[in-house]
Length: 412
Image 1 (cartoon, rainbow, N blue to C red):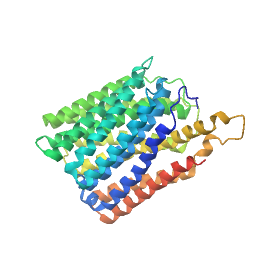
Image 2 (cartoon, rainbow, N blue to C red; image 1 turned 120 degrees about the vertical axis):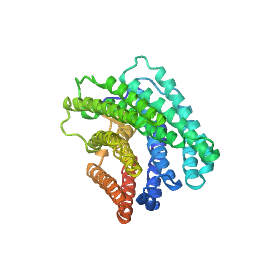
Image 3 (cartoon, one colour; image 1 turned 90 degrees about the vertical axis):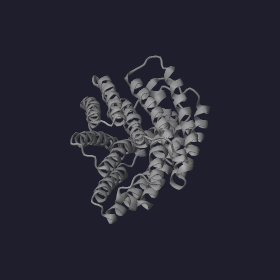
Image 4 (spheres, one colour; image 1 turned 180 degrees about the vertical axis):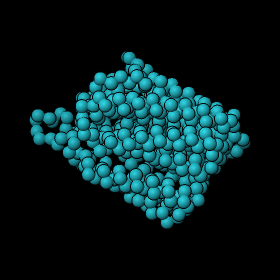
């Protein structure tokens, strides 16, 4: 694995990562307590809002922010603009997300106040990344994806602010359209474009691949952006055929990305891939399948709200969350080993990087995640309360086990 060209104070990314691990467990506990709402397919109630925002903002966004503080300097060969500003941004964002999520659960009409603090934290992060990326000497394909993701994130929080405003004060008629746009720009814009971008860096790194072309990277980027714009236009124009075209273009963009990843993997030197990395690759296959399903549902004009709700759930869990779970299980050992042992190599006995990952435990945890998500979805669609409660409990246990497996690395 290549030596880092630039270094970020390890306390900065780990602040975000540790907060995210707590939020992951908290989100699953909240959703377990609210399992009766999941059975009924009631996603738009305060308890579910709270659990979902701890999952997406507290876990996914905070983990991504922490990872970006470490990966952006490595990928772009430029140091973080201001680390002190980063620590302040962490504090503001952590307090904002915590307040916002709790208020959504207990006092939705006051959530806007926590939301404003969370938005301030996000804007500080966007400013930090903008300053860092602008200092990059030579722009590359990954720059497009990261900038596209950051712009999507900015639009997402804009829509989110309007939703919080409407809960507090009312007066905005197109609440549902704003909600759909918020979800699409958040999960398909921000998260997906970012995973695309960093996969182009991480997949070759973890598979030791060389000589690949990345010929579909720019077409994938531009078609995915076009798909987002067309889909959201379809929401605002209330035109189902435009939405179907949007889903099709998104599917094309995702498929082009998959073709590039497939080529990278065929050029790999490492024949036996690590299990956490394999899990992240499984997430890519999941994402493609869900894009196909979304296009087919739209093509046949299926407006079943429950089906769409669970498709969004599957997209979030099996593509976004699984990607983060897999990559984080590779990134954390690498960061910790580099921080703790890289300067001791040759001077004293140090553990090998692969010894910091318990592959058997990782496989067990990842299998639990897959079984939980599949079982939970089937139980909910079949409206079997016992199954939903059982598999949501299993998902909570899997999340706790995952957190323990990551934290134990820090004691090695």
